[in-house]
Image 1 (cartoon, helix red, strand yellow):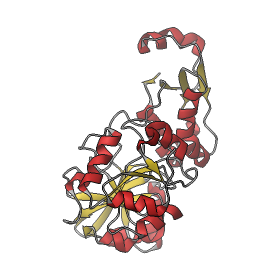
Image 2 (spheres, rainbow, N blue to C red):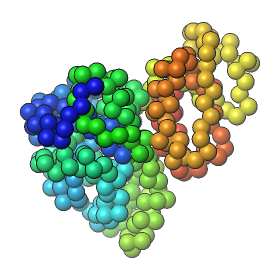
Image 3 (cartoon, one colour):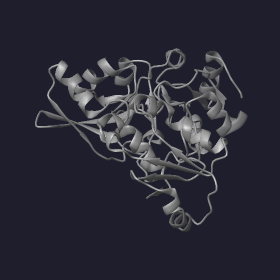
Amino acid sequence: MKLITIEEARDKLLNGDVVAIPTETVYGLAGWIYSEEGLKKIFSTKERPFFDPLIVHVDSIHGAKKLTSNWTAVHEALAQVCWPGPLTLIAKKNDRVSPLITSGLDSVGLRCPRHSETLKLLSTLEGGLAAPSANKFGKTSPTTSEHVADEFGDVVSILEGGPSEIGIESTVAGVKEENGEFTVEIYRPGFYTATMLEEILESQNIKAQVVYAESPVAPGQLKHHYMPKIPLILVKPGFSWKDSQETIEKELKGKFQNPVFWDQPQDATIASRELYQKLRQFDQDGFDLIITTKKPEHESEDWKGIWNRLSKAKTLEF
C-alpha cells in the first residue's frame, strides 16, 4: 500500500497525478480540477466512460460559489446545514469548471466532505478536487484504504483516513426554480433523505418540494453499478434456496456450492456503513453467491440509499 502525506498528495495533484482521498462516504479518486492531465487520469485509472460526470470536492461554501453561476437561496440553506457532509448539490457551472468534469453538461455537482484530512488537503489547493469513488468503474466502492490498495495496488497513492463513517456515496440533489417556486430533486439517494432536506428548508423558512428523480447530471445512474466480484441476488421474504437453486443456476449459467445468506442489520445506519465492506468480504471469505432479502421494514425512507445501491449491484432479482 502506497500511503502518502497531505504535502505529498498536494504535490502529486498539482503535477497531474491522481490520489485516493478519504471521505465520510467512501474513498475518492481525486484529480485537481485545474489539471487536464489529472482529470483525464481519473477516467483512465478507473476505466470510466467520459459521459459519467464527476463531483467536485471543495473546502467551503465560498469555494463552491466560485465555481457556479447560479447559487440559489436553496443551495445556500442546504449547504449551511449539511456541509461539511454527505450532500452533493448540483448547480449551474461557470467557465472555471472543465467540461471533462461535467461530461459537457452546463451543471456541476459540488460537495464539501466531512473528513479532517481531506479538508486540510483541499485548503492547500485552489479550486477543488474532482473525485469519483476510488474503484474500477461499475465495481464496489471502497470504504477503507485497504480496499483502494486491493483495487489499484501501488498505482494509486493513498491519503490514509481510516474507515468511512457513512459507507455509501452522498445524496445528490439539484434545485429547480419556476415562477419563484423551488423544487429540490434527489437524483441519487444517500444519507440525506427527502424528508430531512424538506425539514432543513422549512427550519430556514424556505418553501420547497423535495422529490426523488433521475438525471444524467448525477453519477451512478447506470443500471449496473457497485457490483461485487461474485453474483448478488435480491430475493423476497420466504425464499428457499433448496427450491430455487436449480432455476437460479440455470439463469446465471453456473453452479454454486457455497452461497451466503446475508441478513441486513436492523439499523439502516449500520447497514449503510457495512454495505460495501460486506460485498467485498464475502468474496474474500470464499463464498460464490450472495443472497439477501428485501423485507417490509426496508421500505422506509432511510433505507432508500442502501437499496438503490443493492438494486444496481445485483446480478439477479428473484
